[in-house]
Image (cartoon, rainbow, N blue to C red; front, side, top):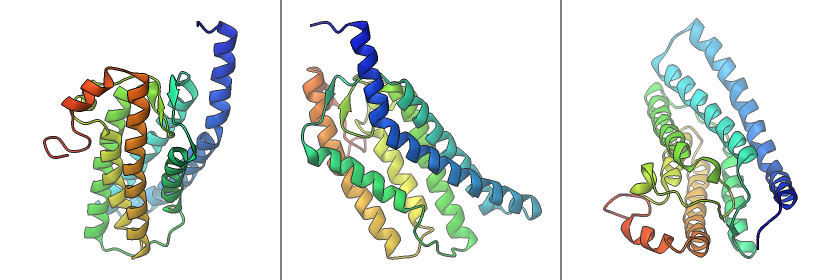
Length: 226
């Protein structure tokens, strides 16, 4: 049964309203990162340090990543399939909430080497994330949903390149936090991501019959390993 233009408009509006809390959250994070970037840039101009320079680059890429997510949320089409039940949605929201706590967790005082390594992990993760989003495009979502089956770019080799990217970024942030809280947050995020992968694959398999073949010829996270 075809959907009328007016119905599509209403569905799109409802989808945008449903995504609004996440958009607000991303915008708030952009504001926090922008303030931190401004303060770090002032410090860098007064005393240039290689570790701080890497951190500034990492912060800039993080802002770009959040802005791109906001744009994709605003422009994405209505999902063809969504997850059923409370637990798949809870896994996504829990993981996002654990990531939010990173902004409020107590920061350690790592030396320049640790700060530089942390920034490099962050830069690597954000570079991969931006590359994956370039292919995923408007199919991006937080909750397990299916809009379009993407099999090009990094998705030709692994089914969840965004989670690979987020694993690097999470490790980079964790290195800068006081322990063991940072490690506990990282473990929570990784466990949540593994659960989300399974729920997302279930939704995609329901929405796209060809997903079963795609799943057989690709790896979940690491080519030739897993």
